[in-house]
Image 1 (cartoon, rainbow, N blue to C red):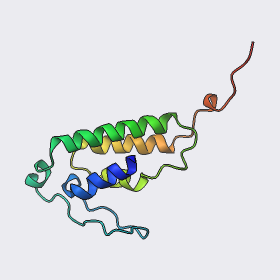
Image 2 (cartoon, rainbow, N blue to C red; image 1 turned 90 degrees about the horizontal axis):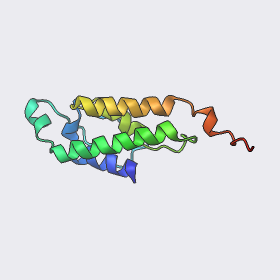
Image 3 (cartoon, rainbow, N blue to C red; image 1 turned 180 degrees about the vertical axis):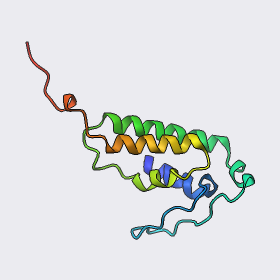
Amino acid sequence: AMDASISFLLETYPHLLLIPPVPRDDDTKKKSSTFATCLDHVTSVPSRVTNALQVLLQFSSSLLRNCINKNVYNSVSELADLLGAANDDLASLALDALANLAIPPALHKQQAPEMH
């Protein structure tokens, strides 16, 4: 549901990005090649959209930081696209989520607790 929400927001508000999204072979829907080319495009994105994306990215980052099985995360391509976001906070949160995806899970979370 989170990856669908992020994809929906990126498709609905393509001016979130300063560069076009990377074309992918597995795309079933053709992504919009529209992106922000001027300040008017950037300011046309409602603040509620950037706030919603910030919440989704913060949750994704927290989830990835604390999970053990990161193989099932489906939003890597959306996070990569958001690295080119016009909003610096969104780009930073996307980078943080990608970093948490790349960090191996903490070993203490995989071990059974000691019984005394």
